Length: 104
Ligand code: FES
Image 1: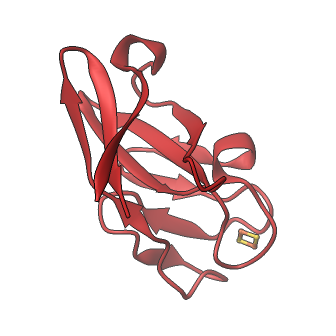
Image 2: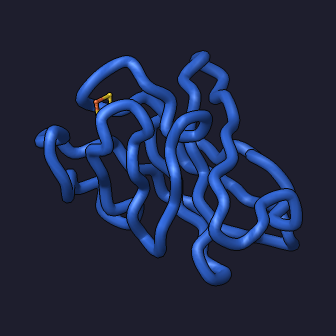
């Protein structure tokens, strides 16, 4: 595991979704909810949709814009059909105003 600097926390307004690429090319969606930051894979587990580009965030729930399935950004659990498979989450921490993600 190693830490990857994603972005300054100030770049993520509360209630919004950002994104970043890992060194392996995988795109990550980053969520700012009331001072806490969460990260998941960007690609919906139901279909070919980007949660960062097409999703909307309401509290801790990200709704996919393509078929309106949803996930809990804290756990990755699918919370609304047609999504049934959890989305991968990543540990995130904020240090000195910078968002860091730990990934394999
Ligand atoms: Fe996300 Fe279908 S692609 S709900």
